[in-house]
Image (tube, rainbow, N blue to C red; front, side):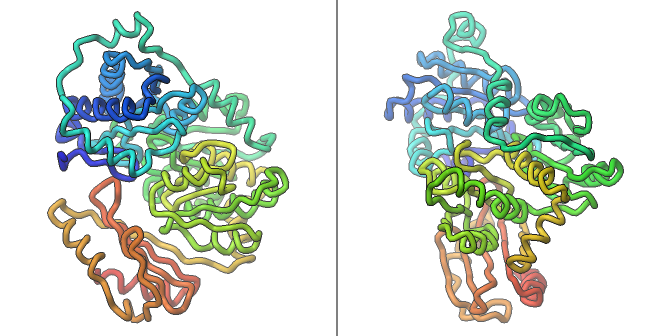
Length: 471
C-alpha cells in the first residue's frame, strides 16, 4: 500500500500539492468506486461535496467526473457544504454513499477526501481498509470526459441541499427561539455561513463573524477551540451577548463561549445537553437508550448516565463508532471531547450546527448563560478537571511513540499508583483513586500525539499537569 495514502479516523488527509494531488485524488476515487461496485452501492449514485479550502471544488469536480465516467449518478453540491449536510443527503436520497473533499479542522494547507457509506456515518474501519487495499492498483490517469458534458447529459446533477437540511433540522429542535439578548456566531470562514444565515434570517439579534469564504481562514486554524476564538470572545463581551457559538471548517464541530467570555469545553457542552435533554428524550422516545462517548471523553457522562439509569457506551476515538451506536439505535446522544456530537433521530454523523442549536435552546429555555448551566451540572455531580495536550511530531518519530504505548508496563506514573492499563485505543491508564486517568494516543488525522487527562481531585489533576511536561 502507498504509505502516503492512508485513511485515518475521518478519511485521508494530506498537504495540498505535496501528497494531496490530483493524481492521488484520482487513485483514491477509483478505489472508492471499486469498493462500491463490490458492495453493489454504485447503482444508487453518490453525493459529492466540498469545503471552502484551496482547490476543493476543483478536486470535487474531478471526483465527480470519474464517477460519471463509470456511469455512476452524481449529486454535486452547488456550494461549499457542511459535512453533516452530506450525511443528511446520503440518507435522504438513498445513495450508495458520499464523497466529501474536506480536511475539516486541519490547517489551511491540508485537504482531504472522506467517503461515507449508505448509512450516512463515517466509514467503518473495515470499509477504509478495503479502499486502502485497492488504491495501489487504481490508475491516476485523467478522466477522458469533461465535467460540464456530464452535467449536460444529466449524469452529474448540481443541487443545493440548504433548504431541505434547514427545514429538517428545525423539525428535531423542540424550541421556539425568541432572542432577547444578542447571539454571536463565528463560522470561521467555513461551510456553515450560508446555513446559519438561513436558519436565523428572521432574527435581528443573531450576528455572524468570519462569514466570508477565505481558503486561508483569516490566518486562523479552522477549529472552534479556545485559542482560535479570541475574536468571538471579544464580540460576546462587547455586544453583551448571552452566548457565542462557533463551527469548524466543515461545520461538524462546535464551540461555545459564555456571556462573560468563558470558553465552555466540548466535554462540558455534551454534559449540559445530556443532563438537560435526557429526561425529555426518555419520555418521548420510550426506548432504553444510553449515552455514547469516546475513550478520550469526560467520565462526567458516566455519572449522568448512572443518574438517569441508562447505559453508557465507551468507544475508541473516532465519530464513526458513535455514529454506529446512533445507527443501531442504542443511544440518545453521543459525543467526543474534540467537539463532535449527534443525537437519536438525527444523523449518524457529528453535526456542529445541531450541537450549537441544542445548547442555544437550553440557554433560551433556562434564561441562563452556558457558564451557569455547567455550574448547575457540577453542583449535582461534582467538578471534573479535564485537559488535553497536543504535541506535533515528525513522521520519523512516530515509531518511538508507538513503541512507548506498546511497551509501557509500570506500577506507577507521575507518583500515582496504576490500577489498570488498556490499549484498546492508544494507552489508557486508570489510577487507583478511581477518579483519575490519562490517555496517550496518536492522532488519526494529523502528525500529533494527544495526551488527555482527567480527575475529580484538583490536586491530582495539577500533579498530572505538571509532571506530564516530562513526557
